[in-house]
Amino acid sequence: MADYYVKHLAVALPLRDATAIIDKAIEVGHKQNLLPLTVAILDVGGNLIALKREDGCGVMRADIAIGKAWGALGMGISSRTIRDRLADRPSFQAALANVSQGRFVPVPGGVLICNANSEVIGAIGISGDASDKDEYCAITAVNTIGYQSHPEEPNEKWADAGL
Image (cartoon, rainbow, N blue to C red):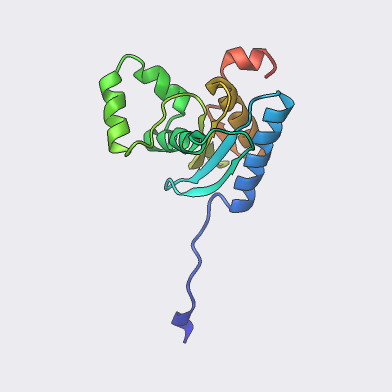
């Protein structure tokens, strides 16, 4: 009789926190008068935990947001870092896009979410405005909710501008 009940899995990034991160990212976007955002949160296995798409977002924004987060998880670095490291390696970028079945978007906006021990527990991807602005919202939201982001700081251009 005791085996009848299903055991619950441990969750490193609960839905409650994923939703709070998304809501904070959208709030930051509103404060900065950004275009409508789509925000996706994936767990460490690349599974979608939560997604919100603001009114007015294009139909591809969800796939782009997921692709930014998925690429960051797949490579273990932010999508900005991926872009910077692979800028002169288009063949490798194409190979990554192929092996990821198209879930690889190597532009800023995909940020790793880490716990207090700096262990990756998920990723956030944002699409809607310029990629650096998307990344700013992601980093700000992750850090504000109490997790650590990678990268820890937004692109200097946006950080200095107060965006």
